[in-house]
Image (cartoon, rainbow, N blue to C red):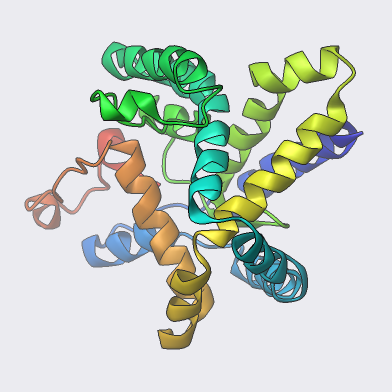
Length: 264
């Protein structure tokens, strides 16, 4: 049933992306601001954001607080580790697609070690022996392939994203080995359960952080958008984002493709 909803949603993201893409401004200062924001769908995004915040306040946040109250820290860590372990095949696949064989081998090594010695991923044994987590997704892969900075997009229930990252999420849903295996075994309910647990677990880790951002922000929507852009840029460059080109301001022309690409 989810696929019946997901396909039209993915098509809607594509249409929104095509309609929302705008030509970057030529002025260097204006271009820098455009690249950081790029939110031509802002009126719609703010509406979805408000709905998401309302649902978060009456459902998700209270459930996440209850989750933290019921489960001690070591059990919550085990749940997070197990969920992360299920994502290792996609981490490895996206690393390969990006041509980063070192990170792909790290992800596969983590999957093998944590699935076996780590008791199905409940214990992150791999990190203790130096295999640090690798976080790669198809949105990052598209960026590495040269898909330029696409408009910011707030997805219903999911939250901050972009046209590129939204498409990446949709594609990953249909090719995720765990999802495929469970569906082929008539265990779709397990997929739904895992998705719900992952959402609750992630929300439980950011209760105080989001409360603090909301409390200290003049515009909570803009603050979340900025933080999302920065986080994605950091992930795309594996924590080594390049310095801005100091000579860009001396050229009256638009930046080349390498300047526009690989930036969230």
